[in-house]
Image (cartoon, rainbow, N blue to C red; front, side, top):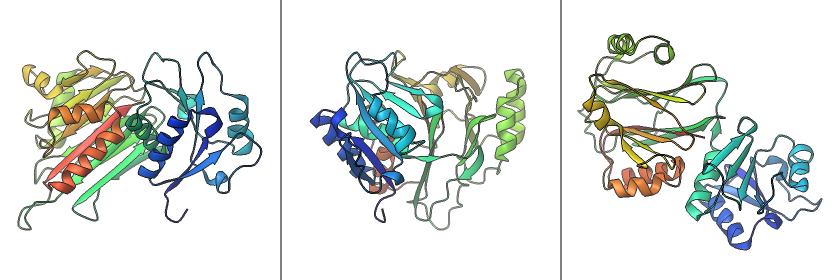
Length: 331
């Protein structure tokens, strides 16, 4: 395991050969150790260190296969399961049992399978946490999963001069009772907000006008805030400057890509609410992503948050530029 961050146990007898190859590719790309299991009682070594079990669900099946269920409850108790389903689902992906079981519907493209496996291997957040994305290099990222959402923060200082003041890092606040709050100190010299206090303001029941005044008093106009309610049913955005890109991508919306910054610009307020749906992927940025057009972003977002994060990392490594971002997806 020294060269790998996680291990993935794959029920190869429950998957067609082309899909087995795609899962192996996903493990390699995600720096996870691929462990093949044929359904017998002889588990490969390192199985008890696995972070995820991947299996298939054939057409017409409506229950977890008995051997897979036995493995995840007795063989390796508590092991999360990803089921690649032959039948179409009501949504692209369905999360069950507080995130322990994930169903992924067709089509199972290589990028889609990789994105879902990487999402499920992301660090599992503690009950309550506030973290900063502090890079040890010019580009830093952090990603985390919860039962109802996945989130990533991006901080890039590449291309900034030593004389220029540094932006504060992106802050992510997550709690089962407070939901998800991503804070982007976009302007240099922006006031450092108290993330816990900011999360409390975002979820507080009050009029939007009063909430906007409270946020303006708390963080001013140099900070953008993305909030997802604890039940993952509502987005709330505080976006003082509409020049900052803010986009939502969703397989369940028409159109599938929606410019939230433009919608906020047309409103009389900088506070904006939007009903959330499974599969929603919100991207808030301090500036346009270099060398990536809207078509590139839409194509990556269609395969999930981790694939979009990969695009951000590649673009910023190839074309370093001062930029921060929060990516958040409803599971």
